[in-house]
Figure (spheres, one colour):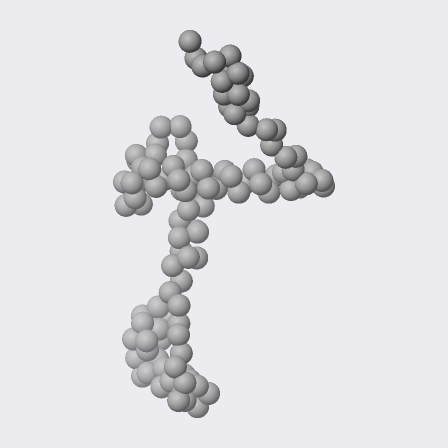
Length: 122
């Protein structure tokens, strides 16, 4: 970690090692004897990637975006569909204070009942 910090912040190696050792000692003093789980930050990185994909999405460029991000074009469409659904949901929440209307009865079942009353599909 000290070497990474030295490169990133352009600090001398000795100073970076001193800071790294100090941080390690602090962690030991505070957390000694305990198991610590440090989750990866993949969901944050994925959401940033997904936002960029959706902002760049246009008709017909899914293959290009998929190749750039190492995804299938189907996955690019799935990401965009999820993004658009969330956007519509948020828009509906902002524009309407009442709950969404219930869906009408399934018309396919009603049509089936009409046909069965006439004795089939002749």
